[in-house]
Image 1 (tube, rainbow, N blue to C red):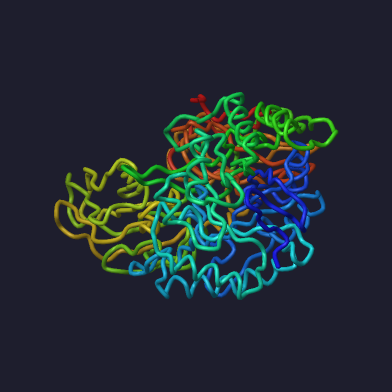
Image 2 (cartoon, rainbow, N blue to C red):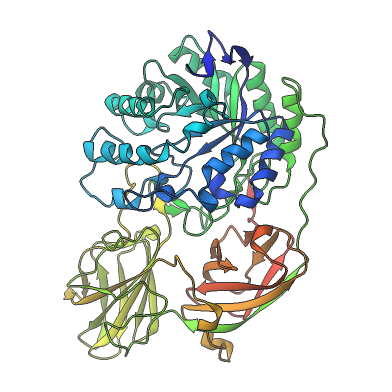
Length: 598
């Protein structure tokens, strides 16, 4: 029997009334050493519960595997939540959206062009079943039925906005039950009658998602579900950002007023997000409605707890609102964390990313994975087995002169073109581009196309869209053949001693290259990496992947968690894809996420 049950208008936990006052906190977006701090601050704001998604694509990078270590040590996160006295709402998907790479669906699954995702297609449900066979056993001891903190588990995620395959939802319900999950199951959908109807499941609690119009949204939920608790499973109190767009925010007083309306109506709530965290490495997702737009590295979300874990305006405002409706700990609000004093880092070592144009076609490269794959036409990153990162495609142009380079299958997502090592232009999916006028300097000129996967679509019908190049490439209508396709996953980054001292002058830095520098730290503390004069690329400190930077904005700094640093000498590594006007980087004590738009 589940520990959490429902009444005509509320919840009972072990037979006692419970109002769920929860906040979203994704363990995989927070450095593991900071989980205790973030959970403590959740309790001190007045939350009695935290909610988290589970990203299938990271926990199962290949079929038949399960990763539960480091950033993915979900059992440890659940133990820490229990130690803090917090309940947990678990949202295992299989689809999570979350502005997360591919919505959490593994690339090895979505690479099948014939599979019907999020449906009762046996190819999809069989993969889900095999994943749950591995995922659920280590989680069962943390369910409330076994004395753990997990009081409810979500079935799918906003499914009513995607499909209407009730047999698929029923399959998921049964999949959880037969594998030992006794806890309350729930669905969540936008507070729209059609979505609620399509995404609901008989016998499973329906919850709604919304950020405003509280009275209307709760009324729609009650109309759909005449009895049972009213719950907003995602109360949107901020928003996320795209590269090239504004930095979103929401007025704290406005969000607090809506939270007050929710609680005054007797509803339970999950604040989305309580603490957003960071899309470290290559984990950001993308939207693709009218155009493809990738999400930035920061997932600050204008949440009550900032990206660096400091209480913001909403933290204080929400704590005051919660105190009107439920007990709040009689402890002081936590102070902001210490910040590292400003540091300037000189990047004194450099190594070009691309192999020399006159190098052997089959030669391994220290930064790429193994030897290249050869094919008449370019092979997509998905066929190459690459979840994220880059692919270098190389061939030759048989003639001299100016012509139109046409990528007939499009690019996924951003292609930098080089001829005999010289930059020739950029082609972007974001701008609906498929062609580029270029000049071949000679017959047999080496054509390099470096394609970046800037994030897999996480919402809607375009999930699973290919990355890299797929299909023929032509030069003035003539097919270019005999391609070498070289993946660059960057699971491991170059060691500092693999990069020689950087040459001078600065103009020599105008090419894709790794740059390395060191800096000293006395006492590790949170800091923010600022890269004025740099263009676009990836950053690592001491091998930890901070994520993408791009001068397109709005985000201008990358968050560096204190546990990433160490006393003494630290390493900064940048992969700059274009050029830099300076060999310096800066660590600052203040984040810059761009001009805020409310």
